Image (cartoon, rainbow, N blue to C red; front, side):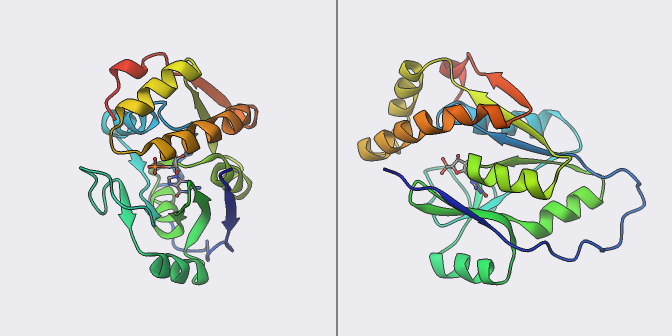
Length: 196
Ligand code: 5GP
C-alpha cells in the first residue's frame, strides 16, 4: 500500500513589506486523483485568468517526457529536498507515490502579498496542511466521472509503468473520499478530451 505522509514547517516571517495594493491574493488549492485532468485544467486556468499564478512545487520524482525544470516542477535530488525541509522552506511537503513533493513558502507569500492569486495543485494531505495555515484559502476537489474511465486514461499515459498505474488507482480509492474536506467539488466529465 502506498504511504502518504505530509509534514509542514513553521511559518516564515510574514511581516514582510506589503506592496502598494491592499488586496491580498486569494489562495486556491486544487486536489484530484491522478488522471482527472487536473494538471491541464490548472494550466488552462492560469493561462486564461489574468492575475492567477500557478505555484511550482519541488519534487524528487524524475521529469516525464516534455516536463522542464522550473515549469512543471523544480526537479531536485533527495538531499537538496531534505536540506530545504531543514531550512523550513516548504509550506508543506509530502511523500506521494514514493517521491517527495513540496510547496515553497517564498514565491507563494510573495505573490499573495503582491495581490496575485495563487493556484496550488497538491495532494490531499498537503491541501489539509495548507488549509490550516491559510484559513481563507479556497479548496477545490476534482472528481473523475468513473473508475473505469480513470483507469483507461492512466493506461494511455505511456510514461507510467503498470505498477505505477496500479499504485495510483489504489490511492484514488482512498483519496476520492477526501472530497468532503473541500469547499468546492468539480466533476470532470471530459477526461477523453484532455491531453496529459
Ligand atoms: P505528479 O507526479 O503526477 O505530477 O503528481 C503526483 C501528486 O503529487 C499529485 O496528486 C499532485 O497534486 C501532488 N503534488 C504536486 N506537487 C505537490 C506539492 O508540492 N505538495 C504535495 N503535498 N503534493 C503535490
